[in-house]
Length: 272
Ligand code: 13P
Image (cartoon, rainbow, N blue to C red):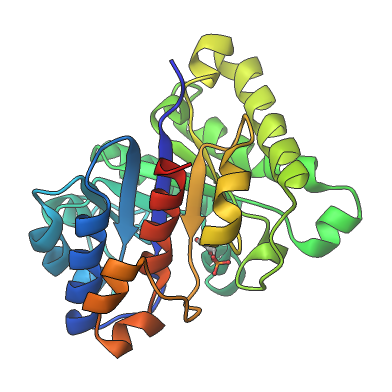
């Protein structure tokens, strides 16, 4: 059975209650069937609001991060149980912005992955290399180590219940998308690791998203690659949504349009 495509919007630190409401309305009006899995990941403070707006839709809710600890004196942190409590089904772990700016090491990412799964949240595990690492020919080594850290802690069967996201750091927010061949090569490498660990049958089922400057105009080609199973979309570039959606959005909502792009990408794929 072919893997169902999975498009997620990482809103990063964008949005407001009013903008989010308009965007969510637009997304659920656009993504009306389940041929593509769609998830939005707003900032923590908006999660419950978002859940109330999308709970009876085909779109699911995810967080952008999760605390590795279960409960306790961890000022500013949000636990997996709390995310579950406010309606999340997914959480990103190991996003490169967390790794590079907030000290998320491979070991910490692995603990966050385990914490998420302990509360039945599906982790979207982000991996990817820096430009210098790619140029030095170390992409496979870096990505392999990021995956290995999670497997060492969580056990070999855990990745089967996760979504993976290959996000080359040099492509995030830069407008430099990986070529379809670069994306396919990295995804095929990740899947080959999964085959070694889980065997072919399980590895074939794991979805691997590509992230890094995905736009409606390059999504179809990226997602047509055999091992690219969807897109993790960030960005806030001022691209309007589909005509009907654009018309309904307030001007300010166009600016925080990661979601807008996300729904366009899902629509692009569906109409491919
Ligand atoms: P951009 O789409 O802005 O490059 O961001 C990708 C990303 O970080 C998704 O998690």
